[in-house]
Length: 67
Image (cartoon, rainbow, N blue to C red):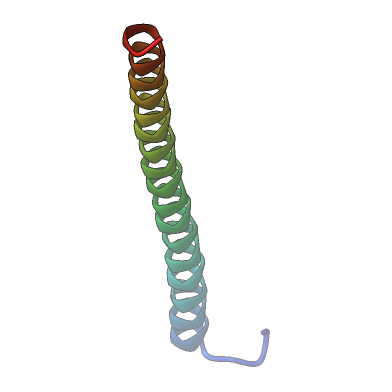
């Protein structure tokens, strides 16, 4: 890049830095989105476990009181 004008070199470098920051924050955004999805899936799993426990309790109560 020795044959370019200094102003052009500075602009090019600033553009490259901007591109790197843009990619970095894109990756951070993707990481946060995946973390959000993980938390949502964990909440769904906990809800399903709660439903399973409730159904097990209902099954046990029906078995006890109708035996």
